[in-house]
Amino acid sequence: MKEIGGYIELDTYTGQMVHDDGIKLNCGRNALAYIIKAKNIKKIHMPKFMCDSNDKVLSENGVEVVHYSIGLDFKPQIKDHDGWLYIVNFYGQLSNEYIRSLGKNIIVDNAQAYFQEPITDIDTLYTCRKFFGVPDGAILYTDKLIEVNERDESYKRMNFLLGRFERNADEFYQEYVDNNRVFKNEPLKTMSKLTENLLHGIDYQVIKKRRTQNFSYLDMKLASINKLKLNIPNGAFMYPLYLEKGFEIRKKLQKLKIFIPILWPAVFNICSEDELEYDMAKNILPIPVDQRYTIQDMEYIVNMIMYYSNLEREENKVYEKSINVRNC
Image (tube, rainbow, N blue to C red; front, side):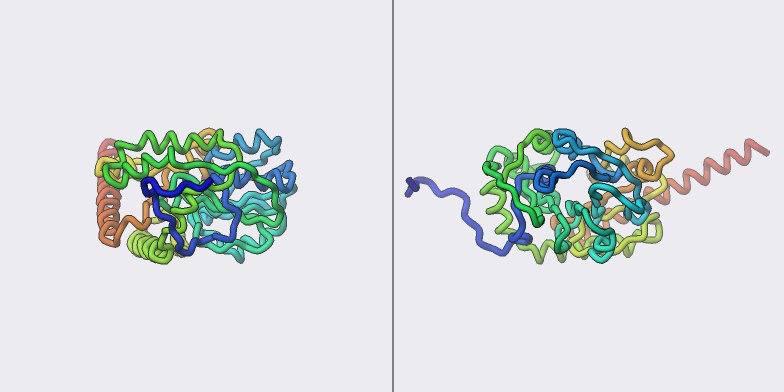
């Protein structure tokens, strides 16, 4: 029986939702689990350069994993593959034309490219909480359907988002970390009613424009010192700035409350120190460009990065000079 009366709950939003035609699931890991079950995948080629979030899904489903390398352009360094090829669209740098050229049995992870269109006949997944203020949620495009009987619930996961809205991030950071860990053990469910509702209340065009503008500004100012040559994606995820000693600048920025994450710490366990992926995970600074920030914020970040980069170069010059003097 429907309840009538009582106190008013959260309003129901009716705005247009990006990827409303996709399969709505509770998290990105389970979007992969869905594809594995639907297509009976037994072997998959995964990039070394990614987190370990999918490891449990793969092992529980008995999938053989073969790791491959990527280049500075984030493209896979693999000519042929048996089984399936898992492509991570890092920072939205892989075009749909390129992805189509990779052949059949492809899974595209667009967790970092939410505004990139899915490709017909290629399994594609998106993660909502990397782009928007929601606690969970994923979108999947696939041509083979399976039944998912249980619907997720998100009301218990909202506190860190609500707290961050009114207070500082550090007060709720542990709750955020704990929420991320939850999904390692969450079974496959459909997206929660709460998350789907919130996604219908978002102004996607404003967000896409802001993210694109911020990314473009950073690239205009930092391309000369960036070891990566980047395309400017629509509705960018983050701006990847690859510096010689990026890890040192990350620490200095943190003291200014500019928090630059290490997105793939698991890479340090998979790769040796002389591999490109190890250095990329260590020294790429993923700079936030999301809808919370303006061009003025980007300008401040650029100024601080340039200051510390110049300081680093000056310190190196002094050190090299002292070495030369000692060797005379």
